[in-house]
Length: 327
Ligand SMILES: [Zn+2]
Image (tube, rainbow, N blue to C red; front, top):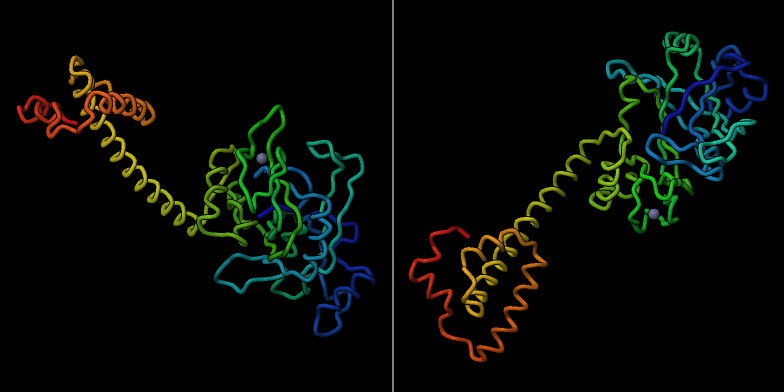
């Protein structure tokens, strides 16, 4: 989801003649200028947003086509019937003398929307006029999400860069290109929702499931405010369960490796105190254990070409010398 807002108009609520023509393309009967209320909405722009993402100018142009005819939900109150407004024109607007944070010309996607002037819309119209209703959010799907640092398309590959982190002084962000579809736009009912945004709503529409987990995890490492949906939370817990299982397997593997190191150590380096070795190996990582095992193994192969029936370690174990400490 991206943020937008309502802007003040010169025409203030009334459509021009040419606008009325466009509006009447969407209505079942001809409406007069007095029967409709029109307003302007900035849907999105090419500035890097809180999620460290930005649209290109070309993407905005494509979106300007996709948003025409799309309805916006004005009222999230579940008790009443949702009120809607429809976008009848949309264009990319160049804001003179304004640059984006990365020094590019600033462009924004400006839409004109209409709604019938009927009594159930009165409250809403006065809320727009008085400036109470301002923030909106829009949703769309894009075909390409490129990393600003390496240019990799996140839809097919994942690079090591993390959104919001600096690389050689440049803040990594994702560049959204090739919009495929524009969905509904809606007014942000609760101001708090504006702060907490849905993770990757943009490409969730296309990917979903565990493919997305890397994106979700990357988001967790940025400073951007985030919130996750129920299904994302479910995916995330599933992913954590898988990781836990893998971690258990890893622990078992490491412990087996450690026991082998102890076994071969007692065999080829009997002068080393097995208790000391036991304590030392507990602090080793898997790679260290592996290299110790390899070293001991080569000694075993050299010194004991034929595998003995019972290794000294096992003999000691039988004498209950080793069982006293837990492995
Ligand atoms: Zn990258």
